[in-house]
Image (tube, rainbow, N blue to C red; front, side, top):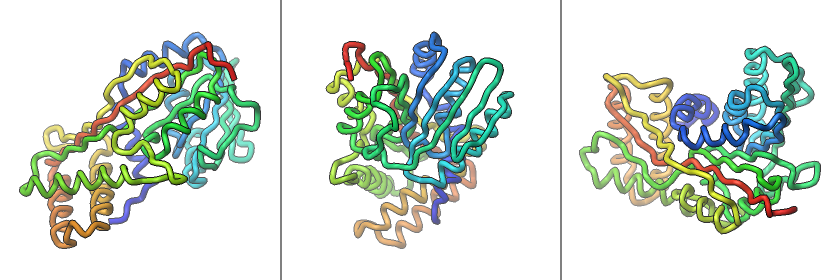
Length: 306
């Protein structure tokens, strides 16, 4: 099964939303509440999940938001969906190139999109100008140390970094597979595939990006405001899945199988049997998946100057 990644990103929007750590999210909201205008940067913006949430999180704040991603097609979807969202909230919108400008009474929202790799990207204006930088299910696929340093430079003193849904090393499938050790090897291989990933010859956050990101932020001089778990719980309730969890489960099973199929440690026949068994369990409303993740809220010390 080939995974439609764009459809997968859309399908997991509700799952992500109910998984976000509420205490971390509430602290973010409190940190932004007094600001009448925010300049924001969203890393790995994809189809615009985090910008949508920021609009809801700051209902009376004027926003100037930049969404950054390497996939122009995803940013096109983000532009369409954010335009629809703003209109549904009563904003008058106008498309200017790939960007959006919107106004509602005294509130304005300007959203621009940049197609670039995050380490190579630089803003058109001087660095150090963002009040908030967000990253949503992103820090596992990028080199942490250089990116944390870049985030530090891009934030104003006292600026906030909010990183949500950072994978942190455990994926569980329930109930236990008939060959428990075989499934553990498949899931261990999936984690190892994240661990060996390299970007510009540098290791990425990988399978333990949550705890590693905490360490890199502290080492760079960030104040860690709060952090907590944001586990995905794709578990059936009376044989039924919430939202679009069934699609997410099948997509993740296909991703896990895809990584294992490239290894000599798994025969194609046994792997196909495992995948078919777990897929049937989804169809039967039996399979559950719990994925351990961390949300982190950090603040650039006001003593830092750029």
